[in-house]
Picture 1 (tube, rainbow, N blue to C red):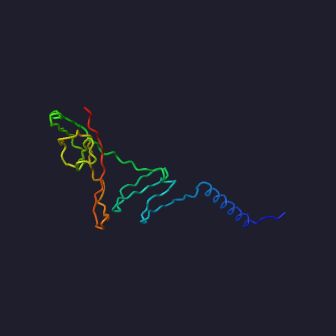
Picture 2: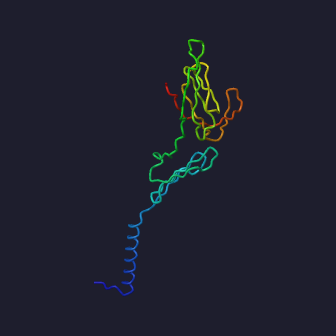
Picture 3: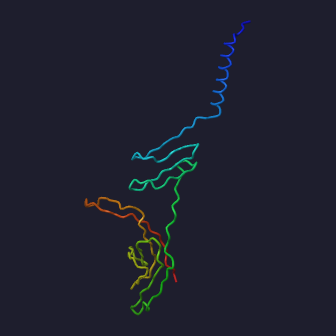
Length: 183
């Protein structure tokens, strides 16, 4: 039977301790993988990070970062919450002013100011288009009012090319809708 010298025993012990520590460290610290996704413009759009939470980056049309949402959900299911815009309220209709059979008619109608609205669009019964105004009341000599929309500017102006080839600047808008009461 071979006997190990004290030097060999010391070397075997150190080697054994090193392997034990290496195995313990490897077992207690799993490899952490962080994945990064970029949009078509090369901006960071999503970070998948199990340890610190996922991060979803959103940008406005000018390229400014407007939202960093942190969660454990995947990017496919993550939708940032946007608060709803207020709808027109306090809708009133009076009329017809005189009987339509007498050649008169006409309606007066109004609504309460909507915070943040830059204009309003109202539509009359049977009319295919809306009339845009900055006022909160109007009159119609003919059909009864049907609905009103509050118009909000919700983004930076966009540029585009018209059918004739001219450059157009369009504002981005969102509308909220309310129907006038029937009676």
